[in-house]
Image (cartoon, rainbow, N blue to C red; front, side):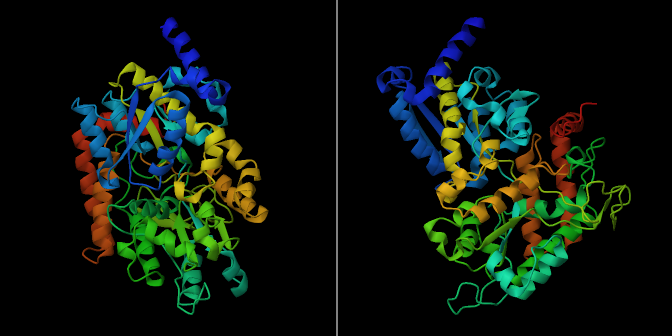
Length: 494
């Protein structure tokens, strides 16, 4: 083991140094090695892997092959490939929450010794939430972050200023602002535009937005309380007035959105935002960089960002009813409003197949490290089309790279301030990180939400169906083990 660590230290130090070594000297290390990566379709996420892969090949000789499958198929493809011994995939780049199931099955390489030997990674610069919650499972680093994800509220600052509106702090204010701006010509093309833009297509990550809405209604006592299950019984916390209200609010926003909103994927909604057609939008951090992209000329220096709206009515877990916030119930409330920014998706992260060839694993780690290092990532997160959002302290503490990328100083401060307000909120809600996450959310929640939005079922029926589906998944994986994993994911140690 000591010999392995020495060799690993030398390998990591040399490879990640990049320009400090000649191409020939570094290239000899991984000549002939091919790394097969599987992720979602580009350009979001995938294309920057391709581009950085070409750089990495030039430095090291390792060939980076990026394969793509639809988002709805991604987890199952990786699980099947690794669990059946096919092992055609060396690296999966996917939602960090999915990794717990893969780790539980013993399919992930432990990256802890790699990280410990890697000075270029600047591990302590990774924001605590992503460093400790996003990358680690059971105290061991199993993932390398390339994107930090949680959702925020964006608004047209110029339109709000013109109309004397304030950024919404709760859902009543959101709906009022959406109503006031809906049908106005927001981009000067003579056509009526939209008060609210939220992509809601099934099988397209849209279900994360409903969790972002529900978080403030459901969680009041800090990140360790969680929004999905009772930590002692693993009974789902979804069949109650908080989630019913969240479902109804989420659906009601559609009154002030595009007629085709139920068929809009993330790219469709972002195109509307970039074209200046949305007064309000809910999205990850991408809208900031997309506003300075050439395609976003209509909204350059016109956007504002704030943490997700809160609520003064929250869940009483014993009765399942909504009750008024009090200092005891909502200790983190601001002026009586409970906020709970949701780490939707957690972030796109890379994991390495434990059964991959040792040389491939070394090269794969070196490539993921290269992607994560500040020299690369501090640039990548400022480019809207990459889909990469900030996750390092150095990306949040200075506006320099953002202004260099094209942000105004004012918007850079506003955008980074909204991110830090979310990350620093003690009541930030963690995404689900237990075995079966893809089934709980991507199958059951997504299906029943789509049925509700299509008027096939009521909100009460939807949450009851989700409760039943989640209970079945929990039983399949084992209630006791699921409870242990869920508590661990929330930092509960007893």
